[in-house]
Amino acid sequence: MSMTRRQALARSGAVGAGIAFTGALSELFAGRAAAGGPGRQGYGPLLPDPQGLLDLPEGFRYRVLSREGDPLRSGEGPVPSHHDGMTALPGRGGRVHLVRNHENRVTAPIGVPTVPGLTYDPAGKGGCTALTLDARGNVLAERVAIAGTAVNCAGGPTPWHTWLTCEETEDRAGTNGYAKDHGYIFEVDPADPHRSGAVPLKAMGRFQHEAIAVDPRHGIVYETEDAFDKPFGLFYRFLPDKPLGGHGSLRAGGRLQAMRVPGVRDLSVIQEAGTRFQRVEWVDVPDPLAARTPIRFQDFGPRGVTHAQKLEGCYWGRHSVYFVSSFARRAAGSGADHYGQVWRYDPAHHHLTLVIVFGPDTDVQLPGESPDNICLSPAGGLMVCEDGGGAQHVYGVNRRGDVYPVARNRQNTGTPEAPEWGEFAGATFSPDWRTMYLNCYDPGTTFAVTGPWHH
Image (cartoon, rainbow, N blue to C red; front, side, top):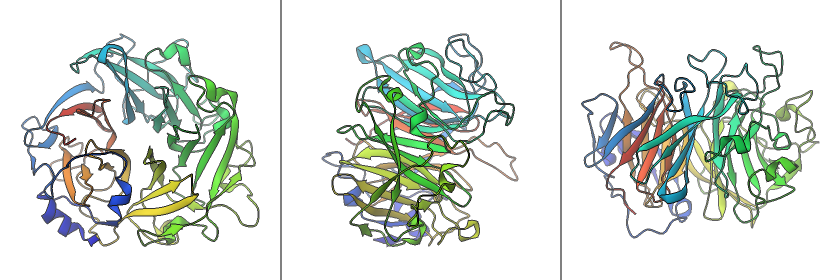
C-alpha cells in the first residue's frame, strides 16, 4: 500500500496534516488483540483548543499534569525544561508512576535540580523527574528521580518496572564543564529513586544513546544510537550477565554487540517495505566505554557493521523489537533519502524486516515526516510522535494502515508571522490503556489525554 501525504490528509479528515508511508501494517500490529479499532477517519478531525494548548478529536479531553517552571511538589526546585521520553509504570493501589526525561544540555533554561544521593555529575543539567498519580489520575507527588546527567533523550521500561534513561551525548569529563564522562544508561526506580541512585551502567556502552527495549523472555536489551553525522549510529544488543535479574542486576555487566546485516553497510539504501533479511549477525564491540574512539568509529573487521542515520524510537512487541530511523539524507552522507523507517528484528529467527517507510513522496513543508518516539495504542496500532518541520502532531496508524491525527500542539514558541511548535515526545499509555500520557518538548508540558480510546 502506498499513499501520498495529501492522500493521507484527505483520508484522515485533518486540515494541514498527513503522513505518507508504505508498509505491511498487519505484520506490525499483531502484538495486541483487539475487537476493533479506529476507522478510516480515526477519531475524527482535530478541534481547536480554546486554551491554545492541545487540539484533540471530539470526545477527548486533556489535563496538564506538569509544566516547565512550575514548582516541583517535592519542593526540590522548578520543573525542568525539555520534556522528552517517558513511561508509565504500575504502582500499588492502582497508582501510576510516570518517569520523564529532560533532554537538557548545559545551556538548558531550567536544569534538573541536584539532590544528594541522586546526582551523578553536578555540572549536568539533565535527568529525570517522577510523577505519582492516584487511581483517578490526580498528581500525588512530583520529584527528582535522577540528576546530574546530560541530554536524557529517551530510554525504555524494564520488565521489573524501572526506567532506563539514556544520555544522548559522548561528552567527556572536561567538556562543557562536566566533571565526569557522559554517554551512559542509568536505571531509575520511580517508586524509590534513592534505591537506584545515579550509577552509570557502563557495560551497556558509552555513546549517543536514544532508546532501549528489553526482551521480556531472555532479558536481552536492545539499544539505538542517534547519530546525525557519518559514520551513523548502530543498533546494539546487550547480553546481561544476570538476565531478568530485577532491579540493579544490569550493574553486574554483560556483553555489548552491534548488528551486522551481511552485505548492507547502510540501512537507508533499503527502500522497499517488506524487504526481509534472513540472517542478522552480531559483532562484539571492541571498546564499549569508547575510551579512545567512539564506538561507531571503531574497527569491526573487514566486513564491518551496519549503520543507519538517526536511530531513535525502540520498543518490544509481538516477540520482536521494533526500531525507528527518523530520516536519512544523502547530503549528510546516507546512501539514500527517506523520511522515516520502522524496522522489526525477530530474535528467534534472526530476521530483519523493513516494515514501514515514510516518504519520500511527501511535501516536507507539511507535517508528517521524521517519526521519533513511538508506542503501541490500545487498539493494537501505533502512535507516532513526529519531530519534523511545521506543525507538530501525534498520529495513529491502525491495523488497516489508515493514518489519523490524534493531537496537535498549539503552543506557539515563535511569532504570529513565523510560528514554531515544539515536538511531541514520550507518548505512553497507562497500564489499563485508558489514558495516554504525552510530553510537549518546548515549552515542557506533560498532558494526560482521556477519551473513547478503542480497545
